[in-house]
Image 1 (cartoon, rainbow, N blue to C red):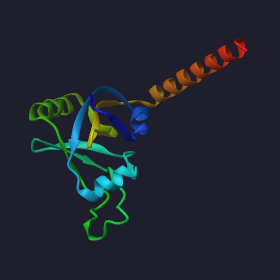
Image 2 (cartoon, rainbow, N blue to C red):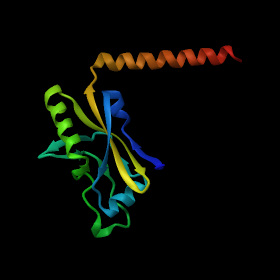
Image 3 (cartoon, rainbow, N blue to C red):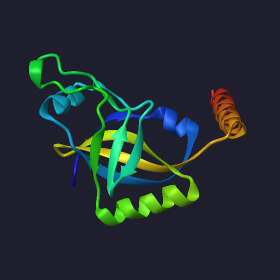
Length: 152
């Protein structure tokens, strides 16, 4: 059984998109980037994935430079290659081009000793969808409060 340890989550993605499907992908990193990720110094907030020439890349992911990294540190915002099967990439490419979906990194986690990215196939939410979600959450919270008060 593989042990999973979540490093970072993209909460904004759940707010801005409907997540239809999720995929697991490896990510190509350098040693100082992995050390920085182990310290939790990564931000997925405005990141997205692009497909170019049959390869999938993550853009906008910020990995802070490692303090003891000196000359080996890479650019924190560089484009990083994701590792997926060719069939999966081609399928995702077709869906993104035809149906107008987006590929968004949802979370970053360790699976055993490897860093993995959970990529979501997402459709953008409209403003009224976001308001509806907030209203549902507020109603659920109010119901839970009422139940808690009743049980006292």
